[in-house]
Image (cartoon, rainbow, N blue to C red):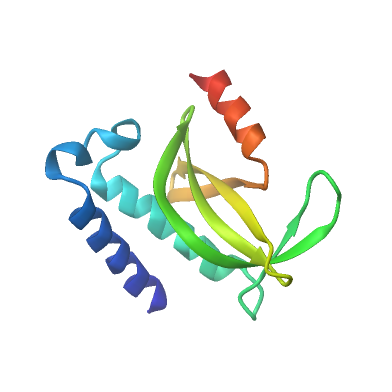
Length: 133
């Protein structure tokens, strides 16, 4: 139920903020319906992928430390990465430290799926975007 409420709020935000003529042209030609599907799939992943208390355990790829993080704000921007798309959210650890989480998503046979999570790796994302242009 929470998932549907958030999806409807997101849809309303997209429709209210983005002019009709710009909706089809942004995010690499994604239609509004595609954006809603992407963000809805990420919300489903976040609802189903967390621990019972709503936290996520994410392995810091540089330090090897397991970070326990809480979901923060979802950013409305969707970034194209080759054939995939990246959706970004803020996450916070138990100390209140902000972390950037970039979810790489791909359309599979059953809809959009998360294929990778870049946790505090914006430089890597920037390098990957340069390689796929």
